[in-house]
Length: 181
Ligand code: NI
Image 1: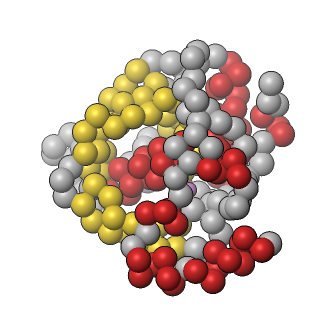
Image 2: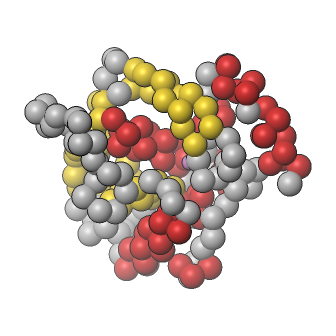
């Protein structure tokens, strides 16, 4: 069993980042303790999202803390921010918009790298919260992007796999530096 205090941020090319995480069977105190520690690590690193693999775990859990976009209207029931830290367990997308857009993404596990990733603008996320209660929420903007980025992590997928060709070329040297480090 993993002690939450043993968790630390993992960086590319740590092989755990390429592993596929397993669904959580039961949301218990152990899972809550790990999620709490993940929130701390995310904050210490000034991140807006963190997935289990990034701290060496292979469970389908991510945390995020995204400030709402003050310019976005929430008329369609689309939320753009979290109200404090959010824990998502066994996340899946039940819907995604046809509208896609590029956005310059970074990742705590890929320090120094940034690049354009094209993703659906609005998605509906279904997951369990830290109490094990199911919820479904439609998100847009940076929040939708963060959810998709973190869920990718749970499948062992990184932004370097999804970047546009141009961004991939731009980051090639940085990536080699990480691989050599
Ligand atoms: Ni990331």
